[in-house]
Length: 382
Ligand SMILES: *Cc1c(COP(=O)(O)O)cnc(C)c1O
Figure (tube, protein in one colour):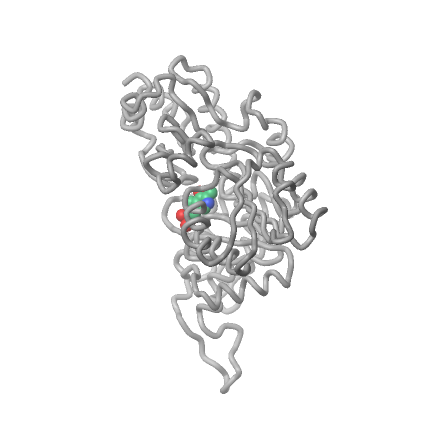
């Protein structure tokens, strides 16, 4: 099956009793056993629920994996991966991560004896060079949030596995989605998503996903999902599955609009710099072109006037672009990383990688591009 078919049919079959084309929302916590010690396929909904199973099969299909897992949030999915590790283990991670991921690494898991080494993943030599005997996991995000840096997944996976094939490589694929890139096919072991974003696509759920291609790793993750309990509920699973069925057509428009917004900002007299992997002068444009089908709907930029007054005027000046956290929904959003999505990262760490107070991040939606550009133009002139 091609990707655009997999989003609709991947891992799906009509519901066996009624033939319902969409799986019903199985609002049940438990299931009748036929005899003591003889459960049927489903036993208790923390372990499995038919609506969630339908979604998890879709997760696996769209990322070219064999198993998928649905969690109550993206953070719960990351938490599940970290629980495979033990005190003393080292994790090499990108230095430009989603703020909540950085917070979980440094404020939650460091105290359990996990060590995190942050490197610039757009310079792949640094990833391999940071490996020690204790390295167990490499955590990549590409494109990165909010600076849109690109990591070469295939080159990094090859380099890491050459040093030690047992090191797991996980890729947070939230920004790109499997429409644009499929990390499992490029050599990664685990794909993670905040399904809250593009997979759900309608800003109506909070959910996380993990996808893998190895049965042993799948068993371990399923055990943690079941034992720790941060599962996605049946209603949210239904909504996410419905969202995925239009992922490919939504992404096509997100990319079209993203490209147009990036070009518009690039040529605007009030704009200092634009961060978008589709621009030819992006430092990793070549890798992005090789690795991704298109360049996505996330665009970051800085105004020439870097004052707080000018930045805030823009942030308050848009009408269609709603000032809000999150991304990846059908509607356009504008975000100020320093006060919003990345506020939990200490200022020194933020400045070191270039997240300044004048940085603005756009999640370009699928509205008519003419209206979006008019909105940006008006906000730039307020
Ligand atoms: C939002 C986000 C997360 C966290 O996911 P939640 O669903 O909010 O818990 C992780 N990584 C990236 C890249 C994100 O954008």
